[in-house]
Image 1 (cartoon, rainbow, N blue to C red):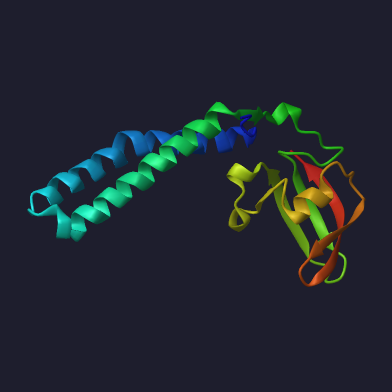
Image 2: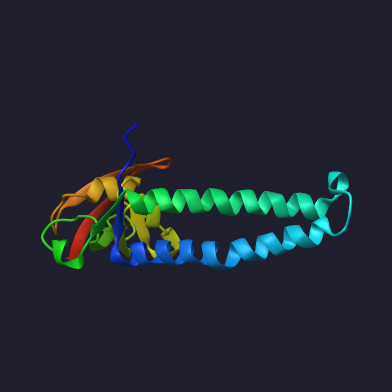
Length: 158
């Protein structure tokens, strides 16, 4: 089975590597200690602390596997590759909502590092898909549950 390519910026790569290192070096030890303490309480068949610790261990190990897989399949977008003529992954784009005249600023990233609260939107999101490959000054229609939103691309930066 072919594994999906994970597109990351340098920042995204660094964050995933840091999370993986934390899980492997700190979190695993903490969970192992919790399991050890819970076993000390006696009968593990009715021991909620043991059950919680084992569930956390399963979550941590699952996340480690996921992160390792993502890093193995990563394609890094370097800042030098970011074009300021057309919108691409790594671009920071200023959009104007043509109805409300609001300006929004988004950085287009791969799905693995999207974080709408930090204005990092995925290239696979409705807005990301609509503006990818477009030039400054272009108007795009974005289909959302409430209808169609029109944006004008005001600027494209690195």
